[in-house]
Image 1: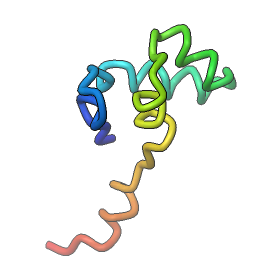
Image 2 (image 1 turned 180 degrees about the vertical axis):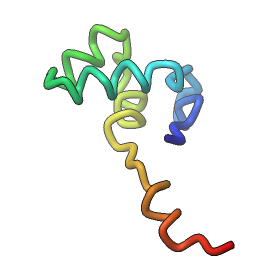
Image 3 (image 1 turned 90 degrees about the vertical axis):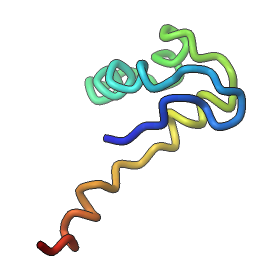
Length: 65
């Protein structure tokens, strides 16, 4: 997974929160409550975590050696 280390808008550190966020959401928790508990309150930072899409697996299908 390649999540940006910092928010593009405000520069706040968000890369360290991705694994905890993804794991808790995968376990069925509400994303909004997870972000609140992780201390991600700015809209721009929340956008970075909520809108991230894992496309690495899709791209690797077309990789040829």
